[in-house]
Picture 1 (cartoon, helix red, strand yellow):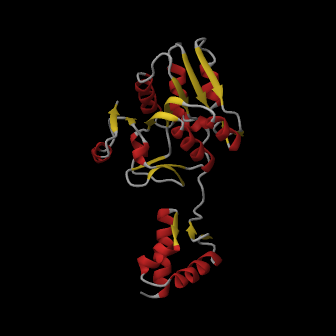
Picture 2: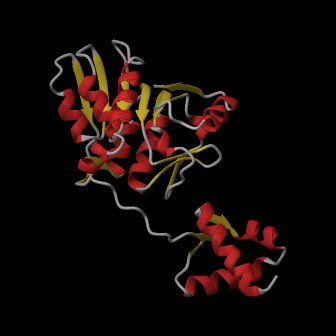
Length: 252
């Protein structure tokens, strides 16, 4: 394989996987690690990737957060149906966490006024729940992202780590059977990961358009999800793939 062809394929791999180690690239291309390091150095000088300790990472531009106004009208009918189904999985006395997704906001709007503790990083979710007398609302605080009206960052992460909940309800930008859950924003991805870690059960709320999609930042492997609620237009290959991994699926 010519040097130029190897470097082109190497760059494709980095962008596909988002990050990869020198040792793995050495095995894939059957060349020494020193050769791979020289390739990476050249590609970095051309501003095509960024070297990291022991490997390389993609520098494909991170998608900026979509404003909540735009998200509210994107696949709105599907998200509302998913939200209504999700509410059926909440019982009086539960302690739950809701992320800053539009679907979680729809849940907050439609949630019955019942004894419940809700932890959230979303201002919009907190405002909706403040109208319900029996619902105790805990906000994470943290760095405010104006586009999504949500809190993120180290303070929000430390706040979450102090709690334990029965159920986490969250969404993401991409759901891939092999690559797992991904999000466009690193701050949001880290917080969703933390939400899953403090919950006994994770319920993923994702409309059909998000399946087969990979975005910038990895959140978790798919097998860390307990239940997926999606809409009935989802391709059957994804439903079968989830069930093969012992993940329950509900379509609405």
